[in-house]
Amino acid sequence: MASIVHQCRLFFIALQFFTRVPIPGWVGFDPSWLHHASRYFPLVGVVVASVAAAVYACAAWLWPAPVAVLLSTAAAICLTGAFHEDGLADMCDGFGGGMSTERVLEIMKDSRIGTYGAVGMGLTVVLKCTLLSFLPASAVIAALFIAHPLSRLAAVSLIWEMEYARAEGKAKPMAQHMSNREFGIACACAGVPALALATAGMLPWLALLASVTGAALVAWWLGAKCLRRIGGYTGDCLGAVQQVAEVLIYLALLAFFHHGLWG
Image (tube, rainbow, N blue to C red; front, side, top):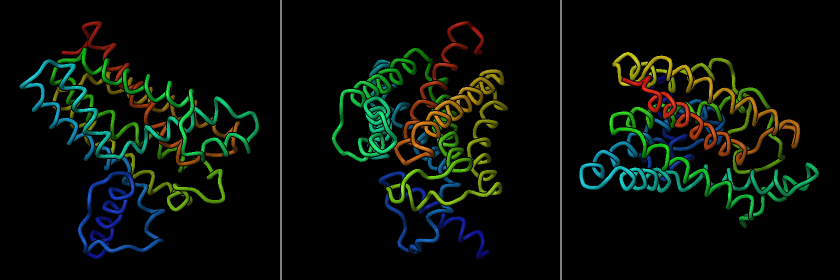
């Protein structure tokens, strides 16, 4: 029983860290819990997907699909406080404008947004809304429950495989070594909803495979780029991986629907 309560605490700590959702007072806080809470990052994605899907379902009943998708995306961004979008923008600025490792890290730490960041973040949000707008309602719901947890698992894989690149930073408390068991829990948090959707017939198995492959490729590609440029990852890198993986998953799912391979 104590172990279950502790796991619940870790989930709520992750929820508080990655979103603006208030958590119960009984959870408490211990700094040592933070670096174990990242195992539930994909489960936080399930919560975000639930809110985004609920907003989309209600909005689609009243307005055309593009409006519903835009409202759903806005709800997800509000829920997370644009945490991941900010990370993507910072990484675009740092990697686009910095030549040395020190300069890249310095630019990424700057709270101001530059040209690379504005373009990268803007294109990503527009792409997400455009891709989802072309899917039917049931497929949008499935896409949200696939992309949000799976893209966060892609980000978690960097914590599992790599070292943190800074001495200090906003993700430093969660940047301790992640064990294979903890990564397995993260995989389960992303895998269970995905398998449930595929088993229920809401998502083609090949589309699920393409989504997993796309998320893995993003983690590998951006992870290799981070390792080469700054010797590890930062919190901004995690946000960038999540955002790019989410877009690539939507691209894969829309390709299946566009070519008549869905339903």
